[in-house]
Image 1: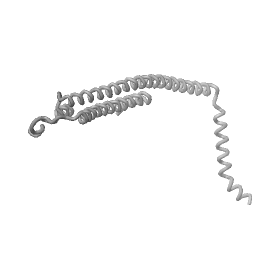
Image 2: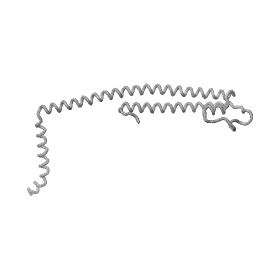
Image 3: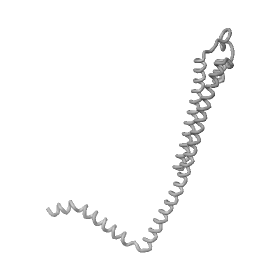
Length: 173
């Protein structure tokens, strides 16, 4: 029975001796080697701390620039919306007054359309009701507002990529 127990615990005994022997080997480092390891460790930690500080400073500067640009983008967006609203009102008033023809409004909005046969109504111009003129102006205004919204989205996306690049110190693709 003792032989069976010895056989079962033999690997545990060998592992214990190896661990104990390894601990005794570590204890045999002399004071100079320990001081050298501590100095290397301290230098590595100091280098990591400096790189972390530099990266944090860059990230703070990037966040400040991001916030400033966000305010500028929002102001540009609001100006674009206001301009679109004013342009739509002007177009609606000009169409209602008869100084601008409806086809000319659409041709200005879609420059690819060409004048030619079938581009104008037959006979004389039909009078435009005030409601229709206002609707045309609103459509032109909405188009301008959508353009301003799209421009804002693109600017914010580009700024977010710039911020991420600065925070992670990686160039964008």
